[in-house]
Image 1 (cartoon, rainbow, N blue to C red):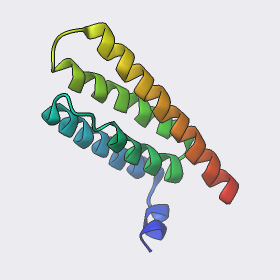
Image 2 (spheres, rainbow, N blue to C red; image 1 turned 120 degrees about the horizontal axis):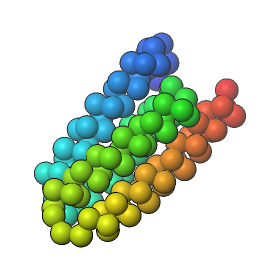
Image 3 (cartoon, rainbow, N blue to C red; image 1 turned 90 degrees about the horizontal axis):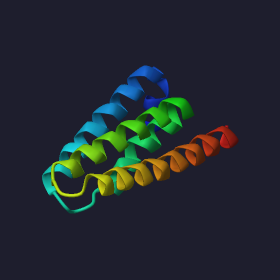
Length: 108
């Protein structure tokens, strides 16, 4: 029932929800400090990839990478390491987005 509700929503609204989720997870990442909440960034990526498609999901992945970098940057210290970590996390999320979008396409 909830899935049917989400399928009826416009794609731009799904992307907006995903953006809000990334901001929320990014803030939680900022508050927790050195603890990794990376797995929670996959939730908005999954939502957007399934209901809005691959291109909007890649945008959410890029936004998640920026949020991850900003949260790590607030800790201070080595900036290059944070760029690397955010980049590899973003790359992993893009792989997840591609797989979820492809799975949705195949199942339809």
